[in-house]
Length: 136
DNA sequence: GCCAACGTTGGC
DNA sequence: GCCAACGTTGGC
Image 1 (cartoon, rainbow, N blue to C red):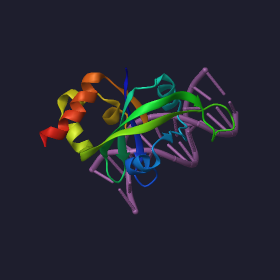
Image 2 (cartoon, rainbow, N blue to C red; image 1 turned 45 degrees about the vertical axis):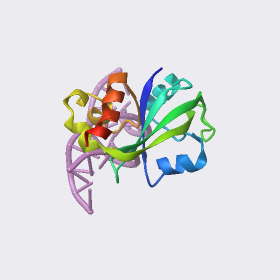
Image 3 (spheres, chains in turn blue, yellow, cyan; image 1 turned 90 degrees about the horizontal axis):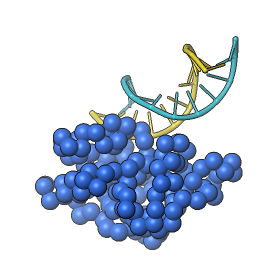
Image 4 (cartoon, rainbow, N blue to C red; image 1 turned 45 degrees about the horizontal axis):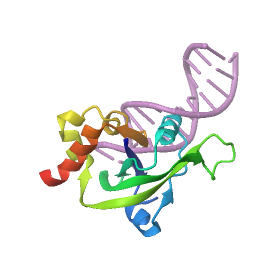
């Protein structure tokens, strides 16, 4: 099983929207690195849901329910989507600030490559981030 | 194929 | 709202 982090602005599609919808297609990705990551996702992989710009925090955990396929919003056939469903909403969001404060997490793409919207996490990184919940 | 110009993202 | 970082585009 793999671990991932996806970013979206809360104003565009929030974790609450995902809870309301049940599942969603992670569409609109138009960056090759992000797309390649989407294509590596397998059903059952765990996904951290991060709100960028206005909140800057991990707000929930999701799971991949359909592996990558052709993005229906893309006529060129270049881009891919996956389907995800919500697993758990975090009681207290884990802020970027908290993540940045952890030395072990200094090299995660969330910090090093702030513009990447779909990135992989190693299991220890995934666990470390979630453990920050109890640290507060 | 190189690189300048431009557009977008996202943290501050 | 600003600007740095980065990706993409297009002229040569």
